[in-house]
Length: 369
Image 1 (cartoon, rainbow, N blue to C red):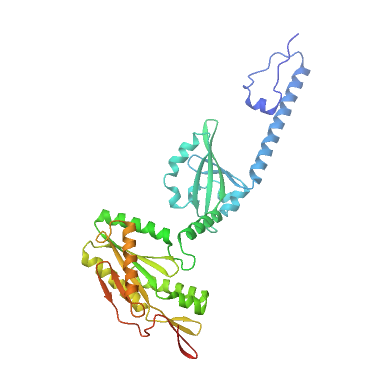
Image 2 (cartoon, rainbow, N blue to C red; image 1 turned 90 degrees about the horizontal axis):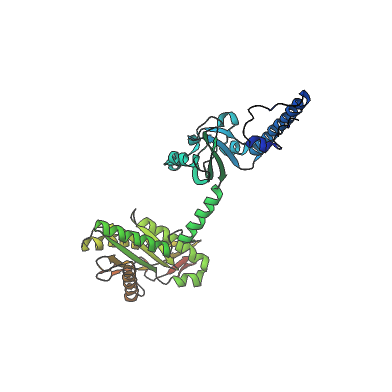
């Protein structure tokens, strides 16, 4: 008796088994009909599996696409049309590069060619700009696949724009003073380190100005912390206006501010004249009172300068030199004027229009703090 040929037991086995080149002799026409019926049943099961997979692909909640190794979009799901704000007929057949900003395109072609030959997914960060809608940032997991000896790429994209914004916001808060928006102590030190490194490369100098509002505590104690915060915010704005375009203004805390002047000529005369001009502008900015509701508050400041490499040999030393000069200025003029002082030089400016360190003027006339 002729043995009945063994047919695949499942669609998966049918799809992965060697192709059937012909059937052995069957015992009867009934056996042949039975074999054909089983093959048709398995074929229908495969079609159903393919349709089920396609439905899952189309309805997946994340953007999923199939491209060739050049990035031409061959298949896409509904989430992809929503992400790129395009219907299927405009999305399919379009190069993915059309939606990617230039900063993300650099080197992308070479990486895609490598990904197409690898079974491991590669993660990319893409800055995208769809034709309609706002730009967004996406992470893309790209995995290669080969069908009929033709390489393809499977893309899964997640919109991470909000996450990136939150990360940037947290990074900004970690590096900046919350009240004034100025670089905080850590950020200022890092920028000073970079400024010193650049000065070494170009044989230039840097200067640090240490700035302290005189008797600022009187404002807080007499008018409240909200008024004190308003003075600090306004003073930060005046420092920015008095600085040069390349200068860095920072707040170390309380009423302590600092300013970094980089790219100065290496001569001693230049490292004195440039900070002197900036501090003169700061002094003149304080001639204008701080207006708090209907009250005018007049302030002065003590300032000191440290220079690298003329007076100091490193980052800590230049900040310490500026601090010592500032405190010496504060000690020499406890009530009047603004003294601009460095370790090796100082200038006493004329008194502002209202000589006390802090005065307020309200509707009932001038009141002294």
